[in-house]
Length: 182
Image: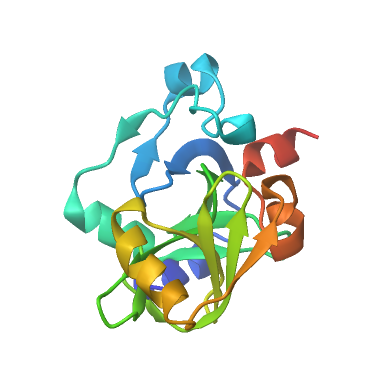
């Protein structure tokens, strides 16, 4: 976490959390979800369908870098961006991380952090996930050829999983906003 963020938390410890305003898609893209975007429907779709309302794709590189440096999860498995003293909870399309796979089978999170593969998971929809020392995430669609090579070489052995159980099995929450409303 950035030092300036830690200082802001110390200075203003009681800033309310923010829900529903930020989303992470299945390709590692960050989306700002204003009131109209939130009113149009949820960020993530159920049963592998298309999301109803993403919002606006963030393109400002320094803002994206700031978000990614301050991206964490809480004890409930809700992922958030620590924006100064305020936690901005993230709506996840599919998983908390999106993994980029390199030709040498090294992996990097959408946040730029390198990780080590601990387990490979394949759901009934054909999505390939990796559990790593950083956490659980989806392999980016552009890197499936490298991932297939890792599987063919026996480096990764996909374990079957039901997509509906991944949240509870790997301890993350797709929609902190829905959890907050309960």
